[in-house]
Amino acid sequence: MSLEKPPLDTPVAPDQRDFLRERLLAAAIDVVAQCGYHSAAAADIAQRAGCSHSSFSREFASEEECVLAAFDSFVRQLSARLVSVCGRSSSSSRDYEETLRAALTTLMHTLATRRSLSWVCLVEIPAAGPRAISHWESALSCFACLLADSLPDRAPDRLRSPEVSRALAGGISSLAYDRLVNCHVDALEGLTDSLVCWLLSYTKHPAFVQPVQGSRPLTTRANARYPTTSAVPFPQHMSTDSALYLPVAALTARRQIIKATAAVISEHGYHAATVAEIAAAADITTHSFYRHFPDKASAVLAAVDEWCRYTFQCAADSCQSGASPAVGVANAIASLVQTLKDQPSLARLAMVDVLALEERGRSAHSHIRQRLTDILTFAFTPPPGEHIALQATVGALMSALRSYTLQLAERSLPDPTNDLTFIALAPFAGAAAAMPPSPTITWPER
Image (tube, rainbow, N blue to C red):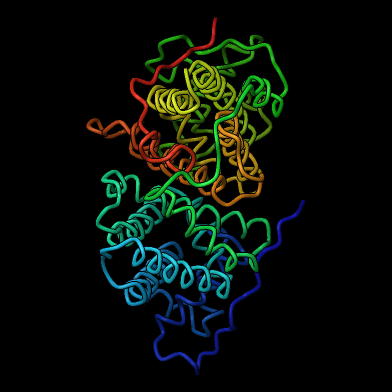
C-alpha cells in the first residue's frame, strides 16, 4: 500500500518573513516532508524560501545542517511552550494529572495542526542517519526531563530515572508516529485522555489487565507471523558478531555479507554505506554480493529477519519458563537485553538503521513491535488490540531498546534490564510487582 505524504504547511511567502534564516528553516521542513530527508536539495529549499542559492549558502553549509537546525528550533520552541503551559514540579497526584493533560493537549494539537513538521520530526529525522539520530535522541531526552520534573512527590523512585522517563517519552512519540505513517493524523488529538491514563498507571494501581490463565504457547503465536525455516541457532553463549542465525544452506558468503552489512551500516549509516564497502568488509567481490542479494536493502532486510527470528525465539522460550506472568516477562526482557549485547551491529541494524528503508523498513520494524506485543499479551489478558496502554507500553520498550542499542559501544553502559522490566510490567501488574527477582534466560536447543 502506498504511503501518502502529508500536505505542505502554509506556503512560504517571502514578504511575510522577517528573517532569511526563518524562511529557510520553514522551507526546509516543507521540502523534506515532500521529498524525503536525503532527497532535499539546497536549491529546492532556497526556491521554496524565495531566495537565491547563494543566500542559502551564507546561512547553512549544507542541506543537512539546515534541516537539523529546523528540527532543533522546533524542539526548543515546543519545549518552551510545554514549560509555560505546565509549570515545574507538582506536589500531588491531582496536580500531576492536570500537568500531564495540559502538556499532552498542547503536544498533540501541535502535531495534528502542523503536519509537515510532524512528519519530518517523527518519521524522517529518526531514520535519517547517525547525525540526525543523535539530534532525535537529544530531543527525546529533553522531553523526558519535562516528564520527570512534573512528577508528584509520592511517585515511585524508578520513575525519576532518566532512562525510564525517556522511555515513556518515547512511548508517546511512538503512538504519534504510528498515526502519521498510517495517515490517521486527525486521531492525534484524541490520544490525550488515554495517554494520561497510561502515564498515571505508573504511579497508581495497575491499569487494565489481569494475568492469563491457560494461554497457549507463546512460540506458536509468535512464530505464526514468520514461516518456519530450517536454521542454525546462535550458540548458547554469544560473544561476537561472528555468530549468526542463518539458513543451513548458506553459512559462508551469505553469513559474511550479513555480518559486513551490519558492521558497515552501523558505522556509516544506511545511505552512506555502499555495496562495494560491504563487499570489501566481507572479503568478497561485488559480483559475489549480487549473487546472494539483488541490492543493499535486501541484505539489510535479510539480516534483520534472521536477527528477529532468533532474538524472539529466545525471548519466547524465556517468557514461558517464568513461574508467573510477571517473572515470564522479566525473563523475556533479560533475554532481549542479552542478545542486544551479544550482537551489537545486528541489533543496531534491526532497531535503528532499518528505518532508513522507508516503507519496507517501517514494515520490518513493525514486526519487531508485534513480537514485543506478543510477549505482553501472552503473559497478561490484554485490553482490546487497539488499546492505547498496550501500544504505548510497547512503544516505550522499543524506544528504550533503541536508545540502549545506540549506546552499546560505551564500555560502562549500565544494564537496562530492571528499567525495562518496570516499564513493561507496571501498567499491567502494578509497580510493586514490576521487579520480580533473578530473571533467567532460556536459550533454544541446538
